[in-house]
Image (cartoon, rainbow, N blue to C red; front, top):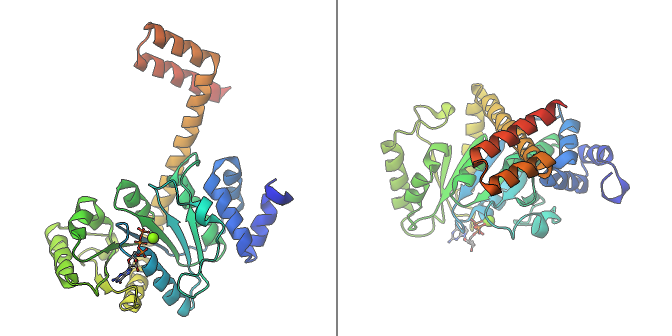
Length: 326
Ligand SMILES: Nc1nc2c(ncn2[C@@H]2O[C@H](COP(=O)(O)OP(=O)(O)OP(=O)(O)O)[C@@H](O)[C@H]2O)c(=O)[nH]1
Ligand SMILES: [Mg+2]
């Protein structure tokens, strides 16, 4: 049973019936992870509507949230039912605690489902929490699902890689093109956005990005092979360029659908999720062995110098494997 006496099946039922509060509660379950999240995964199995997953990443303050607000408005205006998942892997301050209950956040005057996802306290971390949240939004009728991540680190690259279409945001006059290159974002970007194009040097940044893409021999996504990722100039404050970006996103989706690329990406997502689930289980098993008498013995032997860490690891592994079979 979850809070307020409703069981998971009831909440799933309500969420599938379109109740946004229920969707929010399912997202909390996915976010927390553990046994209830596992049950949720089972309950939603076979319910995927194959929503288009759009990843938006870029440095702090580059205008991602403003851009996403505009994009969701454009998507809604074209009849789509977008949802936004905001993921900040580095900050303990963001996440469910602050934004989690604010299911409808009015960022642009629209009525779009926006939810930020907490990264702390989930057994499998983002690698499990994000696919879980995507599964909830996909099953409950949101499309596209926009994942906004802050920063240009490895985690952001990993999250962006979960998307069908990855949009990398850069700003003029900041050295963002070089940064993006270093962070490996050129390889994962399906579309580049030069945001704050109202600032000077926007054109210079576009040329920099073009040059880097030409030089790096990036083949890009399979659907783009032989074609350079488009670069769109936007001004998120005024909305200039947003329609063009939305069109590029739709075009990319069509490209993926024309081949089996979107299915391939979905399979890669599932594989990464399963990998993280397995790793989480092994982690829990390891800790359980440490807490057992065999684990305590191994630790004592390690402390006294009777065995080395590798030997201790072998003992823990043997014990864990044995307990699986019992
Ligand atoms: N000049 C100009 N400023 C912009 C534009 N888009 C966004 N901004 C401003 O840039 C600042 C950051 O915008 P956000 O949308 O919060 O950027 P963000 O990338 O989501 O920021 P973090 O979530 O903190 O990483 C705000 O002050 C925006 O008003 C633009 O096109 N031109
Ligand atoms: Mg933001």
